[in-house]
Image 1 (cartoon, helix red, strand yellow):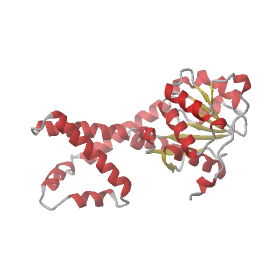
Image 2 (image 1 turned 180 degrees about the vertical axis):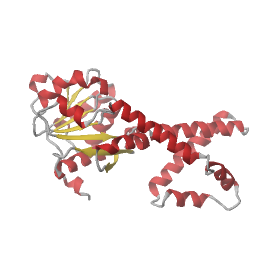
Image 3 (image 1 turned 30 degrees about the horizontal axis):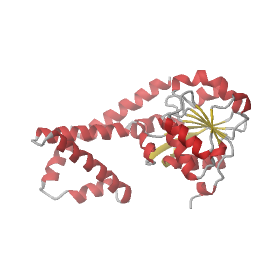
Image 4 (image 1 turned 135 degrees about the horizontal axis):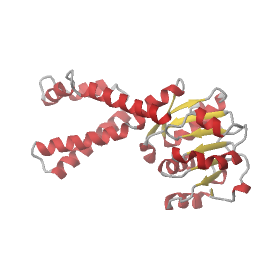
Length: 277
């Protein structure tokens, strides 16, 4: 059992924003053992799924804000453009002892500190959409005031939706955004391209799509279950002079997939920096 799994879960946690990512985190926390009575959810239009989870586990949904005391942990999962509108409410429920965890893209620790001046402990987290099925990965960066115990609390909470990686600093968040935050879209587009290539080769389009989807699903599961390097798994599929080798000669050419992926990741990183101002 990891050190984080020994860390006590917070007795008062407020989730601000229960959209897709907020709902995924809520579901993960409850599965991990966080008592529902410890959770308060603030969202103007909670989904039926979130409402059902809250009802089943005893979470408070949109209570009178005057009745909400200072929280141990405040998780901000609203859209970045909603931060200013939510700031007043956040200040009511956050104290100097509150750990702030933000999953808002493009909002820096400095942005949050300027809106919550009484707070000192901030963590920026960048999860990705496979969190919805408990197979996400989250990169996290902490302000200097966050203690080792608070890091463990954040690790335990975010482990409810997948793996967690601590970064050397906030400067790496844009890189994480470009690789794993946006990465699922790259994989989905690969499925589209593979299916279209199969159709161009003569397969019925629906069959080509089924083959492409199942191939990516299976390859991803193999990566999940086998600790071997990705290069080793690739080599295991590749017979010298065979069909896979012929295809890889195209993908691994000087103008092949590797430089294209570097350009894509660099473009995403630059855009993340622009959005952060």
